Length: 65
Image (tube, rainbow, N blue to C red; front, side):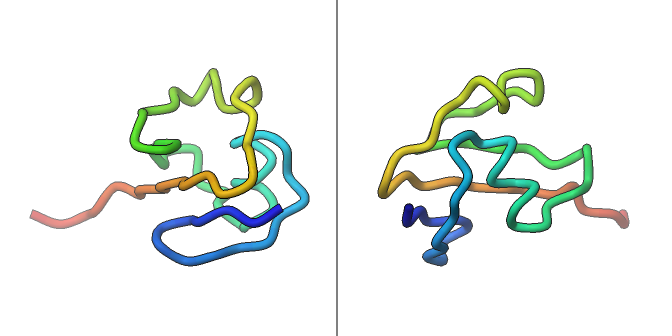
């Protein structure tokens, strides 16, 4: 299925947000996710299904000061 991740198109076999993160190489436990503009909590990623054309945003914390 084709989804957009951080404004780039990706073809994935994943069916959930959690699976997509793993498939796309987002391994850090400290990323934040939003699906179609709505925050997805870490504990809900495995229960949140993806659909063709979804937009997933993955944000990592920045270091520095």
